[in-house]
Length: 158
Image (cartoon, rainbow, N blue to C red; front, side, top):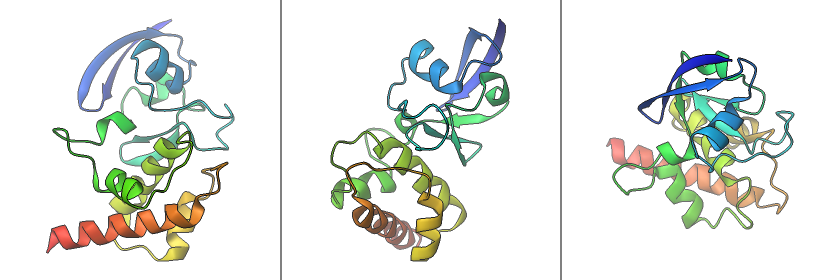
């Protein structure tokens, strides 16, 4: 067991956990941040995606000890003062979800992409979203949502 200081969604929290405990378990079971989902447990489906220092990472495969020095952002940390992030809003506007299980991971991957590539091509969107699995098959709407979020950000920057 170790004591870790984590920066989660801009709040510093202290947790005691085994060094190899997955960040996903810490977020869900110890911090009650349940928007990040358990999917496959192997880092292959993307349901557990969070941002570590702005980079999309699979929290089911990231030990809490490796995340202790990072700024961690979960789906709960994207909205500000009751206003959804542009990516969250675009997913709603494009109806890019059905069951919603994959949605938080998709949004986190899209957020990471748009932070590095504000005006991505369709190929860049597909590449960045590759590895996020949607069993409902809403992929065309997901790509359109990422395009919409990029366009909204571009309009906001003008």
